[in-house]
Length: 110
Length: 113
Image (cartoon, rainbow over all chains, first blue to last red; front, top):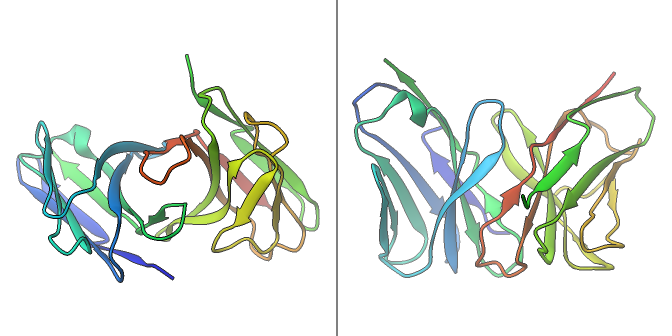
């Protein structure tokens, strides 16, 4: 079945540095969603990308969907300690439920 | 406020016992989902339901059962057939089409001893 792979698994940055996580699918996706899970919390929906090549921004976060709709990225500019958590991408292919990647855990030290 | 409620937050059970995890939503969402989260494994789909009285198996349904008798409720039973039930269980809901984001509950951490 469809698999969504995420890299890196962990990332440790100094506050103010940039951060990027990448998501790759074995099949073409109809859309991709991104979620954030704070330590001890539950995933919270951030955004959905639908169109090929789409780019969306939320303040310091930039989300991209690849031209082939098989990959996506999340870039955070000038990280802050509030960005700590695990970021998941989730793909929607032919099925009716999302397939989640394993996530990238971001640690930000002041 | 609308939301999705999971209870209890922590649950301890002896090996061999069945246990039911509660999930209730008042968002009027059509679809509901159960995911299991293990360290370093991401979220794996157990069961999902698009409408009342209908549900489908996910990737790891063995040892689990669900029911969807009401739109608001989607309880998950972890049976004694589940070989490794200790995990963090997350319930989610959405408007039913795959193009909508999920709202997650705060999760139930199940420990089987």
